[in-house]
Image (cartoon, rainbow, N blue to C red; front, side, top):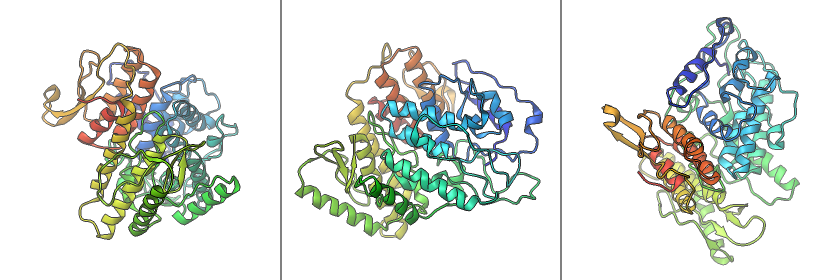
Length: 474
């Protein structure tokens, strides 16, 4: 994956539209030569998630996650105090993971792991990037290497190993190991391609959080069965008893269950290992076993498109929550898994023709399912400090616009113009909660989760997801 430095300047310029002062980076034109066209928007969803969590505590002063994916010459402009530029990518992922872990944010941890596995820029097509020679603080990050240019020597085998190792780490934090496939890159380009374009894309504000997903350019490095086998082998070795057969997206938080980062990307079906019938059977089996087991079902979502969400059984023990046999430490991750299993069953049913409608309907239901869980937890009264309502609205006519746009409802505490991208407003609101409002740590962590939830949806659903994660309404 090759990242054109000019796009970094454009990105920083966009970010600086917010009232909060931003650094302006001047990158010499000489750095821009010999690189492929920009691709930093290809996997936007993971950069967005890392950006949110890195901002919670950023002692090295790393300017933005995108710098970790650039070649060293361009990366130096945003590396902060990091001097080993070959390790900026890892350091960024490591700090974001640390922050997310401290907040019990499984979504953020998963984003950091996925980001750590993304391909880093090199000077030409077919040239492998240098790997970091330092050990990450978090063993989960240390276990993951970045993808290499698919045209480089040994890339097929190497990238498969990256995905399988990533899958194991995702499983270890309670996320879906099949999500590892989404860290993949494009089809191999030609090493004689002087245009540098290859098989890439770079679409801003892509509706699926990355044009590599919406344009079906992602190349899977492994099969779903290979991921299941890798995770099952690891689970057996540590006697965890946790099955990796469920193809679901358990990206959630302990404090507030966020909408899955990849809610819309899963509709492309390649990572889905089970048929709709198999998923439905699993859900039925889980429901049956639940009735015979001791415990309480804490899943209260009532949507039934493609089948009801499987029960989340609360009992006792070190991992007291279970969904279809998989156990979790906190209810947030378990509820997220339940919502995701329902979404997969729904999507499979649509793709097989047994259910009318579209996979976007399934995605909307999953967003609502996650929002219901998030609201339930968030309404335990978050501390917004001196501010009252951080809700975001989506409507026409804001700031005189003809089209629908996003804006903070409370323009006294969150005075910012409207924007077409909810990320601009959500980032500003979360920043104000921390700096101006002096909100509690619970609210700041929940706002980070809300940003991730909003990024996983579009339009009104984005605003709803953000507000639900904070337990507020427009």
